[in-house]
Length: 365
Image 1 (cartoon, helix red, strand yellow):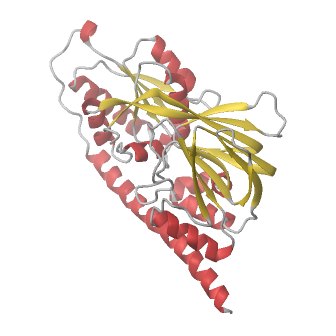
Image 2 (cartoon, rainbow, N blue to C red; image 1 turned 90 degrees about the horizontal axis):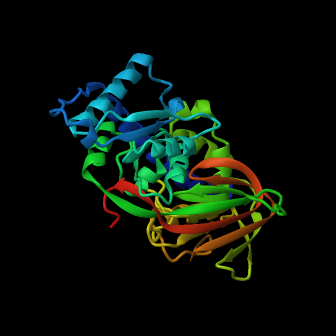
Image 3 (cartoon, one colour; image 1 turned 90 degrees about the vertical axis):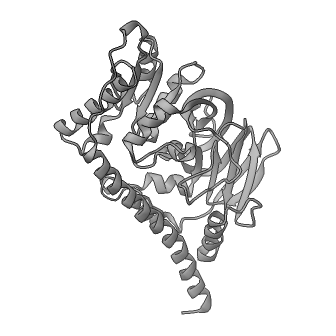
């Protein structure tokens, strides 16, 4: 084995070690969350407040995220949530379940039609994104309850994403913050006259990260949680670079060979892994990172740049900022938004819509 081979092997080990450290931390937190939920007691209620004075929330829940719970446990959790709302003088919340064909937007709009004061999303990142699409541009805030694996928006907003009791406490103690949303247009053939349009809250992009998401098996995800992404990432690690052209705010497209182009409304993957250190969810702009590693040494440089939160960028990691991005590819590439794969495309366009969504969360600064 040559010296170069040893360096390549060591670099890959650094990448996988960082990922495994995150996995073990998340699994430990999940076990603690489960113990807290099992010990939770229904809180005492306050004196009855006339219905005309009571506020009401709606909870949009993805039932597949709670499939591991039996019917008794699920009803107990719902009773606990309702009792918490009553203890703060609110009416019992309305419950709306998502379906594969209606993943949250329609349910959020139905809740608005019933005059609720708050809509809570209890599902994965896809549920959160869909609920946000139904609430964007309105004066009704969105809240977040723990569910799913990624919880990317909750992580970026410092909302408890493993502790139901703490998340509910935040609902009644935090203020509403106005945040930006991103829009992703997906041109699958490169010649679409009516491209698909999707809202995203955290990140969207194409290449390695999307291929990693697409390679995650649901059964493995249920068993390993974040560990499933490590397995899929290891499989996709050695894929070829893609030929792309990147335009920012209408500039002349710049050709590049890259493994991933990721555009972010905010920049945190986990508390330890910050992909775009300067990204803020309320600054009216999008941040982007272009990853161009070659071989194990290149991935080692990428891992180091992410671990140290390098803002300057270097030959393997390029940082960009703007309000509009367009990425064109020579060959179709996997695309993802907020961690969900949505198939391949030859061109994507990403724009920002400043301050159109209210979210109940801690102060942003």
